[in-house]
Amino acid sequence: MLRRVVPAFALGCGIVVALTGCGGVQNPTGRVSVTVSPDAADRPYRVQVVLPNGEPSARQQVYPGDTADFAGIPLGDVTVRAGDLCSGRTTVVADRVARVTLTATGC
Image (cartoon, rainbow, N blue to C red; front, top):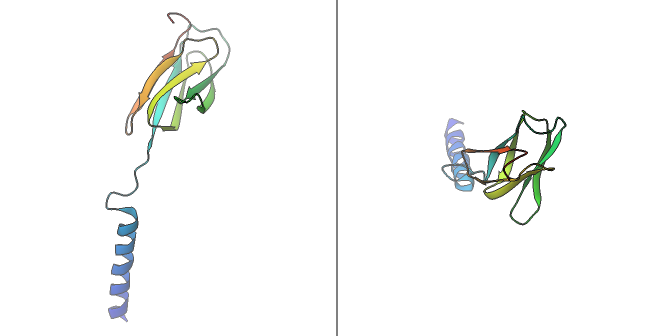
């Protein structure tokens, strides 16, 4: 019985490696951390991460002085917007958190 189990196990491992590759599957997304400046008006802001084609990738509600973390953002250049606050731009890179602070002045 052991003679059949070992080759079957080896074949199964070979199939898994062939389908996923040696390094596994890479995730083509990254993370963005957005802080709303504490000097912004005292109300919640709807923060959006917007792709170059103008389509929103993610959104969250954030209060002044707080930070929101966005995951699963496609790699590349993005714009971060929130109501009447100054927009921010950043580049999303795998294995690194892009950080943006949105302020009410200095646009």
